[in-house]
Length: 264
Image 1 (cartoon, rainbow, N blue to C red):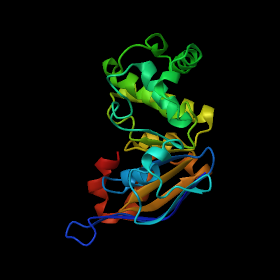
Image 2: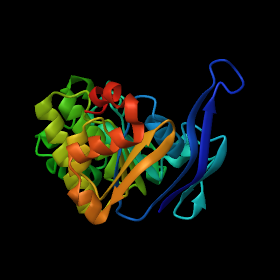
Image 3: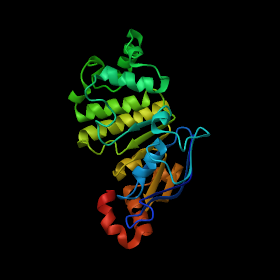
Image 4: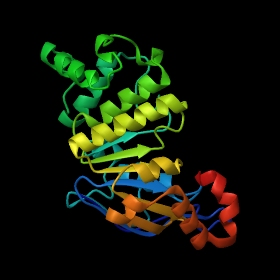
């Protein structure tokens, strides 16, 4: 489904500000894999997501989706394969457009149809049915401007927009980090429901270690642009936050103390 082969990315190469963001990353996801990604700031998590989405091009290596080499494919063209939800609830939506118009844009991203075909009576009913699954009453507010929604409502809408056309890969980039605890839990529960119901191949970056342990069937820990720990299957099911912190301490040693607060 998704395969990264020897991905390397260096920023400001050859200067005093040179930063190796990713070092020879190899990662393969099968259909339906749900991978949570943790790591301290600067570990390479966001760079990894940006390379998968097409926002960045790796210096070396290949990105494959369903056996197709998309390494140099633009972010715009890659959008037909990838759904993404960002940390900022406004990043994945058009705030001055209505809920219906936002959903039409998301739908047309894969069909390449124009917006005027996105608001037929039949499609409007489809949108309402999809919104009803969120249980937030948004199906009764199709003509409300997205900018007037609460942060939790906007993020729920972003999640729906990223997934209701069944993307090949779903990227969740700290998508609950900007929400209050109650709304964060709501979006976490919706994420679990949507991913499991639709068997979506998913990567989720999070700083919440409880979330990383509880969600998904695989977990990877990144540091210094590398994958330094991975757990899947029964090993993943047995993971606890304390075990994960101990593993991080074992790998990082003396640097653990300063990173613990960042990870938790």
